[in-house]
Image (spheres, rainbow, N blue to C red):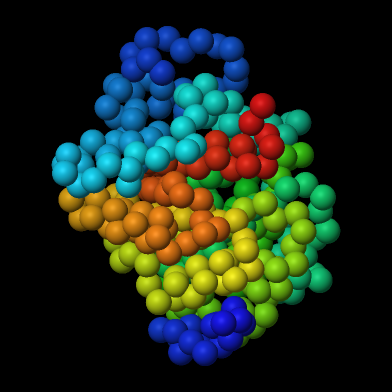
Length: 285
């Protein structure tokens, strides 16, 4: 089934370190991450590697493999190095570039690009704001009302890559959402990865399924990011993660097998996601 048809047929849905020791100063470490490195080991794991921390609660008869496949498992040194990519300095300008409602209005750039897409109120703007925490001059508007983002917003991260904040789908989605997003995803030549955000409390919804089918239809490499992991009990979150991981393993081809659980409030998983972005854009060297 054509992806365009998927969107239009369901138009109604659019309405609805060492824990306490010193850390080798072999690289630049942001103050925020330096504080993380000083945490006790258990807290450090929860903040930096939330999936690893969550896997500790699995019972032995759950079945091996679901949460054990850590395809991206960087060292703390790698993660600290990636922080400098996102840190605004005189030599590394991190800035809002422009907005566009059509692909031909988007800035023409040669550097790698990543985009973030998700259902309205999934926490996309909050996550992007967390990713840019080391660039305080970058304004990412976070609204309590869903559907705030109406355009494709482009942010330039120095010489490294461009991050694109896409409009949310579902409630209060822009009227031209389908044409805007499909054209971008199909034709943007420098797009390296699409990050599809899923609310970990709700799980994969019907509109999320449509977005997933679109990524699969266009053969796009994408990553599933689970937001709001601080909003549920450990037991409920683990149940949701296992269900979503099983879906990824059995129902997708283009999705990266490893999930990225995130809390934009506690910053759990944010540092790991930064490192992954730096890696796939060729900036983790």
